[in-house]
Image (tube, rainbow, N blue to C red):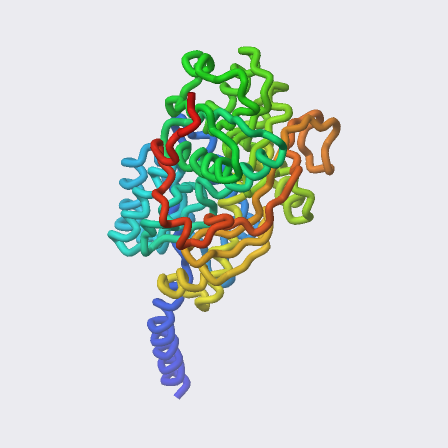
Amino acid sequence: MKKRCLVIIAAAALALAATAGPALAAKELRIGFIAPMTGFFAAIGKDMANGFKMYLAQNKSMMGPVKVKFILEDSTGKPSVNRQKAIKLIRRDKVHMFVGGLLASTGYALGAVADRFKTLYISPVPAGDDMTQRKPPKYFLRSGFTSSQNSHPLADYAYDQGYRRIVMIGADYAFGYETLGGFQRQFERRGGKIIKKIWAKLGAKDFGPYLPQIPKDADAIMALMVGPMSLAFPKQFRAAGFKMPMLGGVTSADEFVLPSMGDEAIGYVTSAQYSAALTTDKNKAFVKEYQSRYGKMASYYSETTYTTGQWIRDALEKVKWNPDDTAGFIREFKKIRITAVRGPLYIDSHGNVVQNSYVRKVQRVSGDRLGLGVKSNSLWNIVIKTYPAVSQFYKQTPEEFLKQPVYSKSFPGCKYCK
């Protein structure tokens, strides 16, 4: 009798294990992460990966009851390699979603892969305007921003400072066109004039060919630089004797490059959805831990990937921790309002993040500002004005905004250029 009971119990246990097996297997969320870990943009890629990894480390690689398998792939910064890595993650690693990309062109390429394979792509950094405007992929979510989003309020700020004639210089690719295009459109709407547009080769380190083109009678210069360009431009601009105020886009003086800049950056006014100088408790804790873990100041690249981790976790909870419910995940992700490190966030009707836009001014601060472990006498992006709840359409309705073409090298035209 005892032997028969043991047999029955063993059989029941085997049956339970058989039925529980798939359920247990479903409790793993496989996330692919694509970033440039080598090549020209490698340092940026490491900032991106570190932000997401810090979120996972804080939560012991768990999102609720779900274990996260994090698979990092090196894109080398090339759109074609991004596509290859995304396809590898989908086919070989069977990821539920993939996150990452850097350049706007990369975002468009990854969006196409997502739709082809019906696998979710979440974009924390690629900021191509049309991904949440005229050409949105179906299997796509954005946790970052659009290229022109912060430029619209910066144009208002510039006009309110009394600037009326501005020259623009930017990296010669989509992010540059869209960032400066948004600034130009809003600045001229207010009554200002863009008197010169200069496009520098992406990755340029020598601005000698471009500096002579800058009109010396402009009220200010608006620059959009990325990567090492951000270090080279202000140094060479000031060395050439230009005294006019400098304005810039998100990446022109981000915390990613700020620690490597010198006094030439002091006074640089830029706009972004994040500043490491924010004095909220959430940001102070984030900056302090990031500094402790990685020995450097947190940047928008690390903040946005960290926040992406938080957003994924909250959406996963809404679908009852089921990683296979892609449609439900997308639906719930778009509904969630979160208080992130950078401030309050929610998704608009077209899929972009509505968030604060901070006008920041580079200042050198003596001592360990706020006791966060950042070395004394560092440069900081001090927030001098906040534009709350800025959408990608700014002060226009979506219908009004979308009647115009996407910002490009030729739009808006330069009707006041000399």
